[in-house]
Amino acid sequence: MHTLIFATNNKNKVAEIQSLVGADFNVIPLSEAGIDIDIPEPHDTLPENAFEKANTIFTITQKNCFSEDTGLEITALKGAPGVKSARYAGEGRDFQANIDKVLLNLNGIENRTAQFRTVICLLWQDASNGLQTYYFEGICKGHIAYEMHGEKGFGYDPIFIPEGSNKSFAQMSMEEKNKYSHRQKAVTQLFTFLHNL
Ligand code: ITT
Image 1 (cartoon, rainbow, N blue to C red):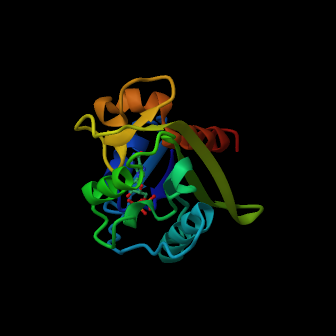
Image 2: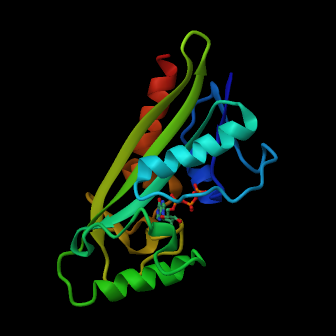
Image 3: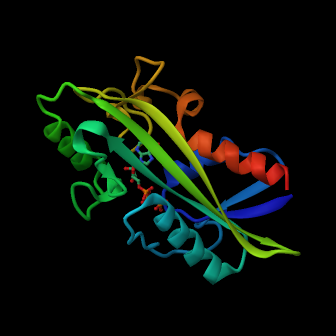
């Protein structure tokens, strides 16, 4: 079985990804790897931040690892909050404050089109090729609701309604969210790639 460290401090991401991993991979969250650091995300693009997170953890552990960076891109807000999604309303990384800011900025705007974009960065040591960097992307199109719906999930889930559903992500079980989600699409590509190595 291959072991991979998932370079994230977000427990919700860990739960979602562990629900998608096949039996031949062992995905270890940072907490289980005994690493307790605030991973930097200083860049203006999702791939650069994803690389920064994975590389920070690889430098410490020298073990195969992956990270992901996710942004909510709202058309009427010119792609905001995008790469700044976690800190849209400030350094407190407060889910409710972030949602309030989105709803305020969309007040009176009819175009609610939005998408989640996840970029995964994999750092993989290969006996013949050395350390390789790979990227995988998953997009979930949808729209922003006029108010919050549901209690499940995390982040912007209560206001995001994926295409093909009339429920918000926060009204779905994890399994149902996985059928639509940006994260599921990126993770599926990651594990398809790893299976074919
Ligand atoms: P790590 O960097 O430790 O992985 P993070 O929470 O900082 O965790 P991101 O930088 O990718 O993660 O931040 C993206 C933010 O976007 C996150 O804090 C949530 O508020 C939101 N987000 C990400 N995925 C989401 C999802 O599936 N549903 C709702 N909101 C999501």
